[in-house]
Length: 393
Image (cartoon, rainbow, N blue to C red; front, top):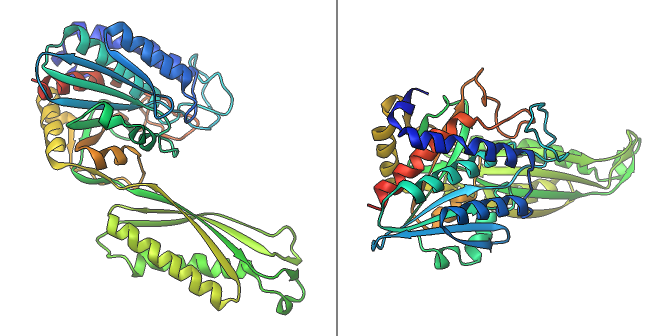
């Protein structure tokens, strides 16, 4: 990569040794709150570098703490560790050895990158303050960040600011992207059970058809985004699942819908919930059926604080140059539970390119053919080292 010339050669050599760690993690993926081998690998590495290590934070989370000098500033860096329940469709040597689960989002790379930085920080960096390296379990929908917070993460390991990175296919490998304010959407899960009156398909007048009611609800839901949300705001209502019936001549008793609801503003999020609940109630009444709505609040809107985002962006510009930094990109409608950490501590969640179309690593995350691009360990780890150096002067 063209910017490697700005990185100390000894650092590059050390960083590259963690490609093997990344591949080991990839070959042995572990799902949410089952990251026992991964956590042990992380803890063992950190201890060998001289960090004070605490395991079992929020279940399988690991925190490595390093103090130098007399400074009072406290910095947190976070990496996620869990894999996804996806069958891998790759044939390289480090492909998952465990059927039905794989590192399809690059958390193996995030963990290896932070470990690579941890080694250089401990061995080569002079700073004054406290560094907390947070290795989080269960980011993929299970809310591992909340579990760590509930387990006293920020009371036990004080942080003045906190940062996290995520690889992103579609962005040139090793390029950085920073966005202040709302950067990723909230994500709520909704299950709707519509109960009618089953009957014979030839005599619909003697039944109350939940499928017809569900169809009307699905269509009516589309009007919320188009007619109830400010066109300048972002909102998504996706009906991802409909299940009902078993035969063409039988009117089902029930029909189940499953929705994904996303927003980039907390007020829009609340408005979506109110409108969805009201619309389902009104539509079900109009068709003479019952509707039970189970609403599960998911991840919050991820909001990057302005000062930390500007700090990180200017540092990346200084280290890598303007050609490698994207400022103020569009927000993402995907979700991330680092949002909960940012509700407690100011900070920044930023992206590092995993590769453009046609490059290694260009396959989108959550795809059976995805793989983390090991080339971005060097710039990612370099940025972490430089961030610690600049923040904990």
